[in-house]
Image 1: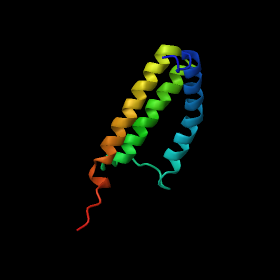
Image 2: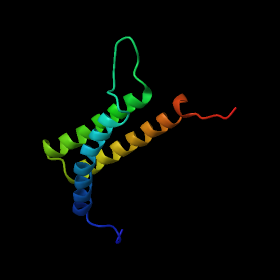
Image 3: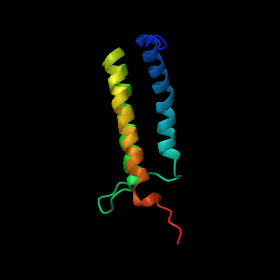
Length: 105
């Protein structure tokens, strides 16, 4: 535990990463495929689109809790850990969906 920085330093690094990454995630979500994400009643959105929007909402909640509710320290670390787990689950779900299977015939 001696090699780890103080919780305040880790919190500041997480905050700066969040404030830098969220605009880029938003930009990537908007410009990713060169077309807007359509969610129509007659057709289900692709799993990639749905998971991307879901992860954007998770990060939006993180930004909101940091700025409005003033979450710092342990609460912010717990929320960031939950967001990380959600990102891993979204990646695994996207990776194992039928959309990314390239089987040579």
